[in-house]
Image (cartoon, rainbow, N blue to C red):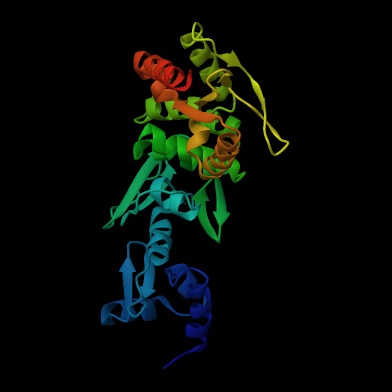
Length: 299
């Protein structure tokens, strides 16, 4: 039989993805003896410190809410779970990841990954759709445990483009969390995500091709009346050489550059792009490729 307590508790649970606690049941007017009776009968199920009705569908949202209740009031979704909440492009995970203050030691639950941190101030956590989750910059830093350098760079760029965080916030967490696993990956990813990285990489490419007749910042007038400034242009060969940092791999920039390259092609120019891997790790091959392109285009 449904009681007024059940109605009130149902309202509480619906706001928490179907999850409630003994304290919620008490607030709704259900005595502790009734809570124990329902647990014994199987009407309710315990997931650590969290409770739910046996008929409640198991979803990721339900599991995340149960994990947060179990881990305690200072816990927050983090790592792959936070990334999913912020809609970062990360691998799917069947586990729920939460970070708790270092002093807290919640018990184990199936498919729950608990990270204890000495660096979880209140400012690092916010509520997203009513759920405690680490802020985007901290979430990006946590992903260094799961992703390679290029994937992490793309996510850092996406987070900044969506104005979820700033570059300064990302650097802050890289410095705060220095020394833990993934630090080197995060440092390299943020170097490429640095808004100044394009100019740094361009300078390195300029030194590499200093003797090949390329003109830095060469302006090309297009047939449609517009103009394009090449990173390095070879006027006689009509080649635009671009030194592309990590921003080139983000969706928005890729689309812009494709449109730009098509406009250049209609004006009789081709665009050749080199990234950080080409310029820094394979300079000999890159220089040979530059020379080959120029030779093919000259009379």
